[in-house]
Image (tube, rainbow, N blue to C red; front, top):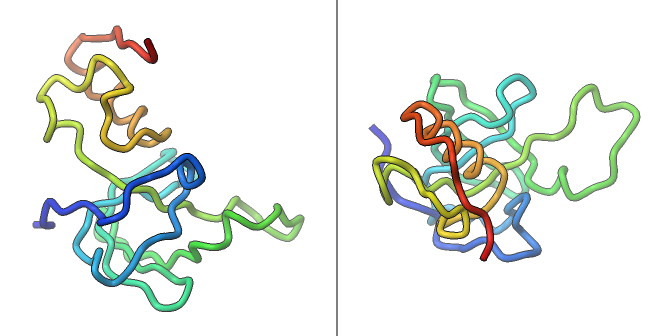
Length: 132
């Protein structure tokens, strides 16, 4: 079972959509990996060598992700966009019913918003706030 440890870095406006600040000290930390079929999948960060991060998804699949690839311009040779790696803080660790005000999410990016909306939808708490 993965350790509930979040990466030491915190998202900033320049890294909101994709984080490149991973280090081997973050090993065991929780993350989201973009997925062409499911938007994002839960994963555990295993380590990094150069620009290649290794993660293991909740389904047991090991992925190697070039953390610099999403920052480069699109290429016509790419069959699908490069995978992105985002910090994951389980919403359940804050509240078992999710977060009503999206501004209170500890890591505010599309994966955490989707996760929070999914959790609240399954609990029939479909309304959320965003902003003041």
